[in-house]
Each structure stands twice: as structure tokens, then as C-alpha cells.
Image 1 (cartoon, rainbow, N blue to C red):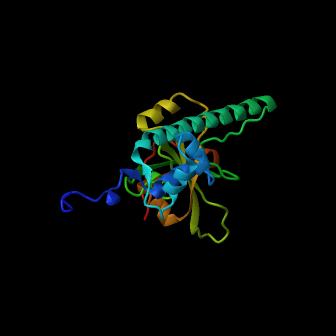
Image 2: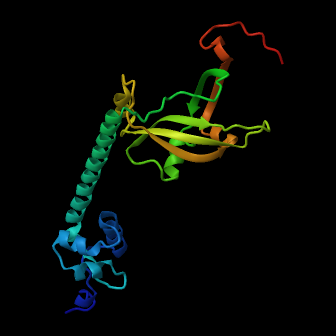
Image 3: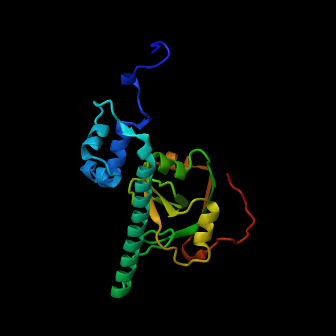
Length: 233
């Protein structure tokens, strides 16, 4: 054997999955005590799985088992969706049975509602609420942000430093899918109300390129009505 051209057998390494990746997948599937259950599913010895998960062993999980592991992950994903659907159905059934509906209305509200109006904003593609939630790890891969909520609590000093911000998201892959899901629906179904945490006023308005609010006093309802402005500096 030419030692310069052929690698010695003891140094050859089979294509394999890293120890830490196998451990992460195992814990996701079966929790902390995952090794025996994974061994059963892969039809291998528990001792082999223990070795593959141990970073101090050179031997790692053969890459030939990767398709089976992917299948286990996909199966769990389907099962989780089934469980989610079953829980939603159970909640709805209980609400119908007891005559109680857990719901909210997408509309601004305060204690007295003295000032009422509308708001409009231009999206900031970089510093947008969806990106903030994604950076915080709170927005799922299939979550699509369809609304934003700003909450300013009662203040007595006339100065507001922090505000509470929420993103409202539904399960949709893109804009068209979200639009179809919400089309012609008075009740939107389940919507995730995801807290972005406290922000300064500057940080909140920084989520948008432009922002405009108009409000009218109590029942005067000026929204949409034309007028001739007399600007006074």
C-alpha cells in the first residue's frame, strides 16, 4: 500500500451527522430522555445512539439514517398540527356549550374614548414590526403580520416614555395567502397577539417611514369630511 496516496483505514471517517445536531433533534422529538426512544424508532442499539450523541466518541450517526430522522421530524410536525387543530376544536366546542366566546375587536379603545379617529402609516422595510418580532424569535416561519397595536397606559405627568407594542399575526405563507384567509370574514378566528415588549416612543415611530393620526372630539366624527384649512403658526 502506498502510504502517500491511500489513507490508513483507522483514519477513514464515514459521512455522518454531528453529535450536537443529533442531540438537538433527539431532544426536540422526545425530550431529555430521548436516546432510547430514538434507538427504537431507528431500529438500532441504544448503545449506538449513546455513542453518536457523545462528543467524546469519534463515531457519529451514519448519514444513511438521515432520511429516517427527517421522516420522524415531519411526522411530529403533522402530529403537532393535529394536536393544535384538536385543541382549537375543543375550545370552540366548550365555548358553544357554555355560551362564552373568547374574542376581541380590532379597534382602538380607551376608558372614555374622548378622541376618536384614524391612523395611517408607511411601512419601513428594514425596521418593521415583523422584523422586530422575528429578531426577538417570536414570529414563526409561517406567521404573517396583519396588524399592529400600540397601547399607552394612563399617565399623570404629561410625559410618556415607554409604550407597549403588539403585532397581530395569522398563519399564512405570504400576502396573497393571508389576504385570502381574511377575505369577507367578520370573525377572523384565532389571531396571535405577539408582544414586542416595551418601546420608547421614538422606537415605535421608527417602525414606520411616515405616520399620521387624525382624531375628532367625542361625537363630532370629522373623519372623511372635507374642510378649508386656515393654517396658523
